[in-house]
Length: 435
Image (cartoon, rainbow, N blue to C red; front, side, top):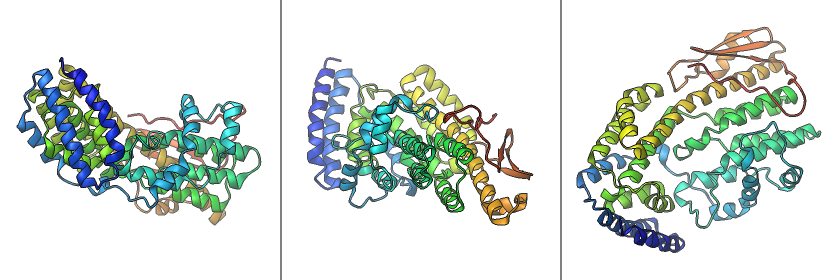
């Protein structure tokens, strides 16, 4: 391994190339990063005595080649200007990091003062625009906005709660709606961060009790909450590309210029450069490990959208367990990927339950009475399906309440505001489903 120091030195020098490369067309940039990555991989392979296996490269490229509409970047107009306007959110989000997704405890007075002074209202759409144009992300020149999205949502919710508690309902609800807009129309590259929507939904559920919204706000809450729905095709596209990333990190010494150019085009230049320099993953695994990862991919990805997500994990359980036992550096990331599928099922439970409560309250305002079960079901259109087990949700309306049922999951929500126990901003959390 005597060449590893040389590899690291070259990797450090390559970071200075990123700013220059970003100024040239993507095709040329992909070629440049491919050449640099090829040199790094060749040095690493020579230093570790690894002979690149062309079969691994061919099979990886075969799985990387198909394009998914759910993976396409969403072009962001005036992206550079929006990046600059959002910079003030980064220090606030980083200072809030120790309180991730915790709305019960108010932030320290000095931090709260800074949060209230920062003009963040109306910037959620710009934030989402920046992160969804993911192939243009360059962490050498801009903050990691995608990595900070859950913290940005926290800032919006905390500011909204404070405004609501101090007699500014319009401003308060506007900030809560901005928190939801951060998760609007999700795309596959951000599915892992989209799962943090769970805690924003729980906070909204609490605010329905402490600050009942007027009809116009209820309509806006219904629209923004519906727009945050995570679809099965998007989840499956994210699964496919997560598994490809595991392959990139675990087997990159086997890849040539063709694979590196394809990765840069698909994931963006900055992401490709960072992935090829991942120190925790030498990328030198051999064909037996690749065979297990390839089998996992082939069992989970092609039929993902046709079956519940839980079934996909069951089908690939054996190769995943073998990888975790024999090659933990490849197997453990697979466990993280599988856990995201499970979390998508929990997100669906919390999401559908809040949607039912919002619709029930709006129908009550419109009708002057509790809606019937049929009226609530019609407001949804088609009955929602949980992606984890494929079961459809059932709604039952009783006086003042709605029961949301999916197999073992059953939760009852009130159509009337329910004062929270105790004082302060603590709120009852929606329970996790029983699986």
